[in-house]
Image 1 (spheres, rainbow, N blue to C red):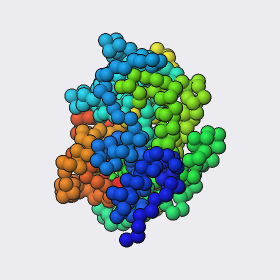
Image 2: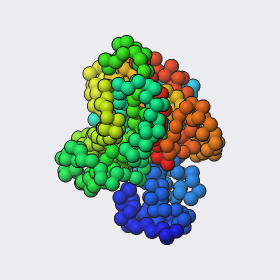
Image 3: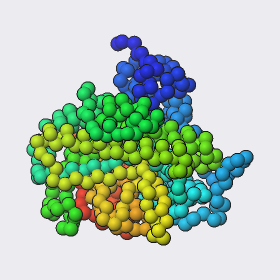
Image 4: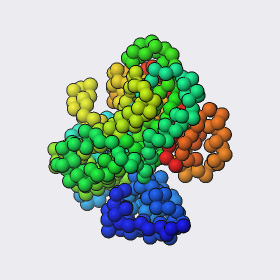
Length: 475
């Protein structure tokens, strides 16, 4: 086997600044502990650490690298108001926020939301039924702020989204063509550190932000190289069956079953680097007590705030362009065009108006827009249905709903609790074929999607369901 060789320029392409401490550390650790693995595997692993460092902070070997991308969490309720730090509102004066499905939400997520609601810039908030602990704002957290944006309140994977294409073929088309559809998924999707040899072009690459903003200018080549690809973790592209259950569905579809493609992914390395860059700037400009450091904000009328807002919107549009590329490739392979498309995103911030007319910035980290009449998809797991929904526009949730089932078990715990055999058995029982994927994505690591949906009856109407059949994920 050829000797493993990793250079600084290799790491720079996946988000490690050349010559930095973390780049040197990554090379040393990989050469010591992963020298028997091939270069592609190692770079893919390092990109995962850079994009989702919290998933590796407990790994005995990799945690040193991960901790260079994040700061260790301190006890959530600890207060350290020293020097020029911006004080939080006293806990006794915390603003009320609506919580959905609270009995299935862990205490850490609730504590994190409490801290977020004590920021002096906050006008309102809500916690969705799929909520679980994150960094700064919990996953499933919705936060309205005044003239300020919180980069980590948006998250690392800016504009991560769902995209559903519904085709005219009947549901049994999948089983009748299972082998060919499996080949189509393998040929037309790329995950993690892998990309297409010749990526397609896209108008997104001509956007002025790639010229005008230094932070994203240097990422244009990376964005082009990753166009049409998906991230790792819980990102997927899958063939499945859509069942329309509501006559009034806004899609113009009859109440029956259809073949469909559903994808879940975000803004790849472009979004991750934007998030890292502007979170660092926000922390330098906005000193907060330690338990709130990840909630540092940028004023929208500041140069950094305006830059981030433009970069965030670019990353969100780039994520959408990636999905459109994926779905076009699969449509071409099928020789069919979709008869309906539903797309919605999370990990983003929107300028919206509260009922009193005040304009605010609504952060939805792992939460999806559910304004009146807004369509979306809320996925379950590989063996549980996703839901096609229409928002009711409930002001108590800040016009929001959950973005999925939500994890009830960390990736590390899932890996330690289940085996590959158990994974195969649960998928076989459900009639689901998996390409790639790991034990950390086993369906039992997620909350019961039926319970999550039952907790948000006031937020969305269900128009139909999506049942996964052939699932493609990163290996």
